[in-house]
Length: 537
Image (cartoon, rainbow, N blue to C red; front, side, top):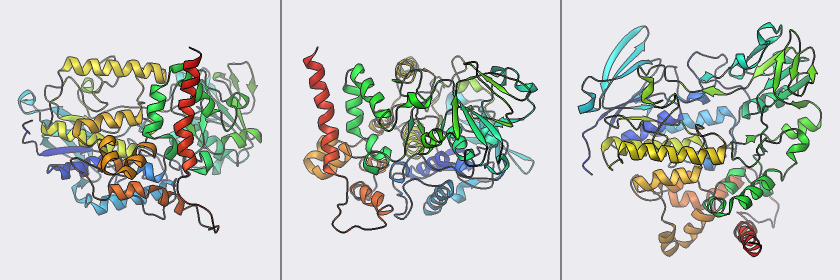
């Protein structure tokens, strides 16, 4: 395809997605400027003691749910001595190391808020955007050839007060989990946490060591997974593999559902803890919490159904039970995504006020494809490698490196994906997607998907690790445009780095590396189930 002369790119936000976009623009010879409203990089992971308007907020005790080998930038592994799952401060250190290593800071304008993005008058011909920013009270307008929106989706709290009758007359304190920073002020208090997501579970567990009693209210339940998976390995290094994905997507639905529910109940029976999802076969994002079951079994966290109504001092649940003398209510009810700088919000939300993006990135009805939304997806994969590959795909689109299908075909693709989301996740408008399927779809379009058959002939050891081992980010810098010379070694040594930080007491004669028995189990158990299924059908 003939590449366009696009050069100047505006990037909104200097979080992990914005930094990925910035680096990818530079790799492609573009001229990016990144606008960041705060005084530092990191976005969500840039912890502050107080919440700030328009900025994502986390609490002191946040740890990552993806391990370091699965969540790094594909050509920049974490240091060997970093733990597999990190406290937010360690991840922020890594983000700063990444920005320094690739010399990104000089392209970022800090304390600069994007207040308006509009199409230029000649957009239908040029695809250019007028971007108005504000710094220290002064507005500035610039024209850009393309815009990459990297502002995240953990900024604007979803607080549906109308769904909780009586909350206005409740005499205790109530607030959204975005305001929560730590457990200190809750000592000896009775606390209700509304929402069984990652934040709600984390907060409930942390408060259970300080508060006199914690109640955790859930509308629909959730699977709860541990970061520590089979034989003590990180969950995602065993679960997020190409082979596992192939098996899950190839098996008959009944067998796939049965296997999924069985696996989720492996550690403990969720029904016995009040956590069982209403529809256990849906692949909704699970909760990652290593301590919640033990806090429930010790009586420090009591799981309750959805809230029916509040009184001045108590809460009544849907099952008719009532808890008196509640001091605090924390609403961990998630976030909504909003783009206040977009004068025409329908560019991104072009149908039924829902985000409607081709490949989860591109507004499909633009006359010129010069805007991309990066990082607005959720999956069992980490956001850093996902947003990095999204940025590489988007920049190729900007440059005209490959031709997009007609608008009608893009809308058909969106509808097809929505249908699959309804089947797998129970909600057609969810941001969730199947990680490896999605990554391979983007990688194929830009020529960076690993060719397993070719690898099997030329580098069989690497081929086996790529297919049966973790689908780590390095795979998407292994070949094709933007390949990294260190990718092969990073893949072949990923288990060494994983074990190095936990094998701090060496037992002589013990084996290292990923056990072959696990590979054989992964390989043959599903095949056995298929054989059994075929025998009885």
